[in-house]
Length: 379
Image (tube, rainbow, N blue to C red; front, top):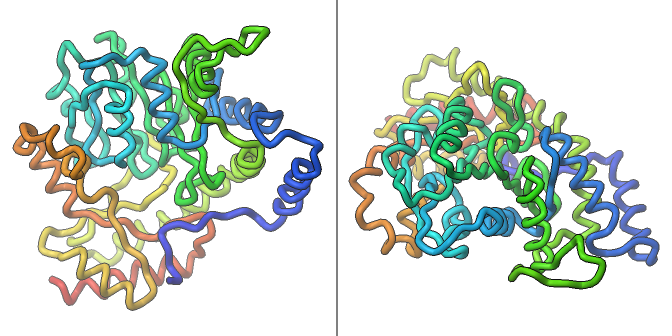
């Protein structure tokens, strides 16, 4: 397929450096795991996000679980989670012994809104996981953070889609008590597998660092274990990739924004009413992990996908089914279907167009024109 949704990219000029640093490890000059490159990557990523601390992990799923554990989640504590998110966001709550409070999404951002949060907040609520859907930090992020402070609950940013995104110039990862990033190959920057926790709280950092090391007391002079943790460490090779990706992250996001602007301009000039791009608030800088378009309910998106696939164009929608309708969660969400009906409708009527760091402008023009042309037969 020529026009794909994701394309893991390492600039050619960086590959010799990567190979040399990997060679140094293979020749025994540097450790394979938890060595200087991991520490360097953590320091650089924390600085990029504008926070004090970072803990590298082997996945964003592990980062979410460690964050909840570090915050002291207990049995029957409730965590508010949007239904427009990946399975791991909800699964992390259950793995750490909590209960999920499924919340709807805002139709303009596809993120949690303060109004939806208030609908499900109770005295048992311990935390909110705010997903920066598709690379967008909701313009309500500061209001949500204020709400959490007023209620004495924690805010975890699920920033898997959003490294480099910002609101009012403040980077994703710097609004909550903790934030979690993903470096999976489909994400904006990648280390193959991998994740990162960031925080400004030194106590939470110490806890997360310990849990990432099986519960080891990292300040103790000897090998001493004080908590029940797991092995969720990042390797040196992943950190080598991460440092190179981080160096290029701004360029990656600039390219994605250029592609998004082409899509915006073509949709606007076309005058079509059955495609409505989800545009960011002027205070938001979008990282564009995905380019989201709302579509008319009269268009069958599966048929549309089949049509554009004939032109070599990928089309998808994240996430289907919604979190609360995943088979594993069905028994936990029997009483929320009516309340979430409007959000489910939103999630049934959108698509994501190809966008990645290697996409060319002429490819973007081809994709959006072919999409518009193919849709005419479905109206």
